[in-house]
Length: 341
Figure 1 (cartoon, one colour):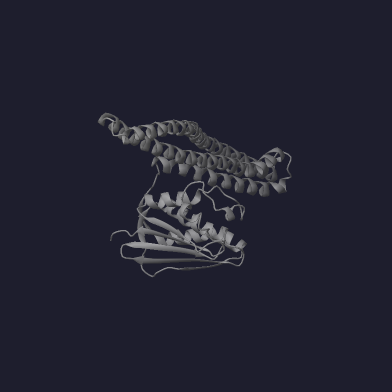
Figure 2: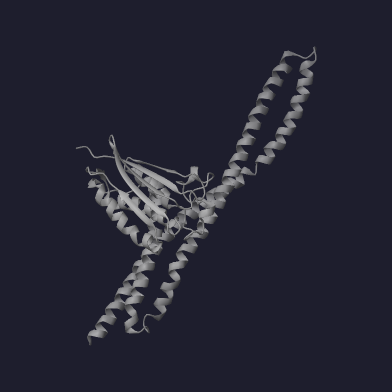
C-alpha cells in the first residue's frame, strides 16, 4: 500500500470517527428534546384546566344574583338574624370565587405564554440541529468518491460542524442539569488570570473576524478562586462570545478584572446592539431572546446566559446584566469569592 493510500484511509477513518461521535451527541440531544416535549405536554394540560374559568365566572354571576336577593331581604326589618348571617356567608363565598377566577385567568395566560415559548424553542432546536447536519450528510455521501487532496478540507468541515452540534447539545444538557441540581464540578484552587487569558484566546478569532477592538485590564495581584477550570472558562467564553456576537463590526469589547474585599469582580462591556427594557429583566431565563437580537449573527436558543447564571451560582458567585437600551451596548458583571489564603 502506498503512502498516499495510507493517508487516504486514515482521513476516511477520522471522518468516520467524527460521524460516530456526532451520532452519540445526537442521541443525547434527542433525550433532552424528549424531556422538553414532556414539559410541553404539561403546559398544555394546564391550558385545559384553565378552561374551567368561564364556568366559574358563570357560577359567580348566579351567586351575585342570590347575594343581591339576600341583601334585599336583610334590609327588611322583618328579616331574621339567620338570613342576615346567610347573606354574610354568601358574600364571603362570592369574594373567594372571584379571587379564584382571577387566579385561574392568570394561570391561563402564563400557560399560554409557556406553551408558545416551548414551541418556539423546539423550532429553534430543530433548525440549529439541521444546519450542521446538512453539510455533514453531503460530505458523508461523497466521502468514498472525494479526491484524495480534498480529504483534509472535508475533515475540517466535519470537525467544525460536530463541534457546533456538541456545543448545542452540551448547553441543552446543562439546562437539564441545572433544573435538577446535578451540575458536575471538579473544583480546586485555580488562577483566574490564566482562565481569563484562555477565554480570550477562544474568543479572539470571532473578534478578529468581526474587526472588533478588544482590550483587557487585570490587576497585578493574584486572582485565586476555588472552582472548576473548564466551567469557569465556559462562563467567560460565553460572556465574551456574546459580546463579540452582538457587537457590529469596528465595535469595542472591554474586559476588566478587579478585587473587592473577598470577591473577584470581572466586568465585560461592549457597545453593541444592547438589550431592550422589556427583555432586560428576563435575560437569564431559559429560552428568552430579545426581539431585535434574533437574526443578528445567528438567532441562537436563548440558553447561554441561563447556563452562565447557573454555573456562577454553583461556584458561590453572582452575575448581573445591564443595558441602557437598544443600540447602547451592554455590561455584564460576575463576582466570584476569592480563595482563602
